[in-house]
Length: 234
Length: 388
View 1 (cartoon, rainbow over the protein chains, first blue to last red):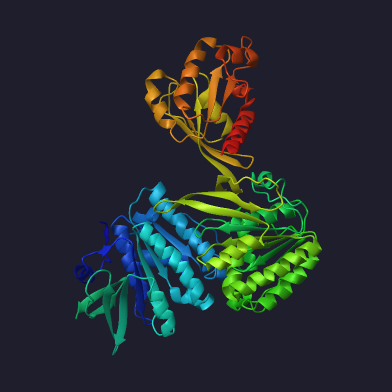
View 2 (view 1 turned 180 degrees about the vertical axis):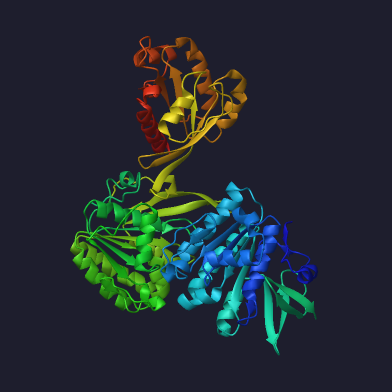
């Protein structure tokens, strides 16, 4: 059975690898490094030879590549396996077309277009490039929920969490804590097999995992160091 | 009658869509279906018809940009108007003629669409995404208004065309949609672990007496739009019949793996001609490659048999190669090459000598002079699409 690592040794050790076909929601308050964690998980995928797709509702594709270059992630070695679905550039009025790595949806409302672009990257990775593993991250569901109602986003996720299972891939979905009512969070959680939860206490950040076939983890303290988060103990 | 501009679809619809009728491009999520509505709109604008595009997923400039991706400049058409059901969602201003101030209010959308339909009497109304309007305004409410817009289209001689992404809506909604539209074109992907390859088919059309449910695979080209795609066509024939030259003649970028001018591995190329595309594979003619020929012919959809009209001595070998490739009754035709040479046998003589049935076309060709090659391609594609 294929397994996936998050690229955070302490969490990976506790989880013993995540089963393929798993969909995980990453919940945390603003400014706690969720976007960095997402990139860290995707970067781990690139190092493992996975195809990697990032659906970005907040940052244009070019900025993401620039960030990776600034942090010397060696992204240029993996460029044919890293695809970004950019839902931002076209809403900013930028006159940009698709590149090999960046496909653009019209807006975060355009779930049809986002779905098409995700599928195209999957096809490229599995059919053309003959990869056997892929990870998809959606950053973030919260932005999608600003423009579409819960039911609409639920339907979209219902389809794509299913595709993750069928493709033996790993799905990571970011949700801002405190931005949605309990019903929204409860409804969305039904779609996921596991949770990575982040909290902030007295200016310190903690992370824990639940679900994903293992016993619930304990809270671990972490710090953001450059392009990644580093566990600093319990 | 309005044509769809989608290759083969107008044939399946008996020429196109009669005015007052409605058609829905019913697309599986993840498959590139919204291009169908765009292509139909562009085709009709190009023919001089009026057009309305109801933009619900994209800002108007992004809409125009998307058309441009396919090589279609819609800005030159004065008779196109956009109903902007998007900008207000983003809090952006809009300079379009029809702006919906609240895209989550079906009454506001109806107000704009009704006006646009009246002004575009005798034209084509294309919805960028009916599903998005349903998501924002409610499924039942939207479909209720769709009934109204259908009545308008009868009154104003419009046709209504909707892109629709078939998210997992309530069964009753999906059923209602199939009832509501006069034609339903289903656009799907072939899914194993992931979706690869896409095809469309006519699921319903109520103005054609005997409609056949066909499916046909397509590719979306940029530029170019929707093209019928034949995944595998073989070019076979004896040594030196002109197979590689044939592939080169119908394509501009073939690479053959030659050794001293003879193909020792295989030619492969992608052909894009008059709305049709195909992956075409040339087979080597020498007998020592026969196992490769058998292997290559798996999943082929049609065969060109190339022969040298001046060398009847190679005809038995040609027939043998044909037998190896088309064990399952694939459509095929014979390309009688080198017809420009003085000692070439006539098509009739070739038919007799090779005992080719009357039903199989023999195309007179001179590949070197590019004569007959496109006729051969079009004829075989026609045979393949009829056989699907």
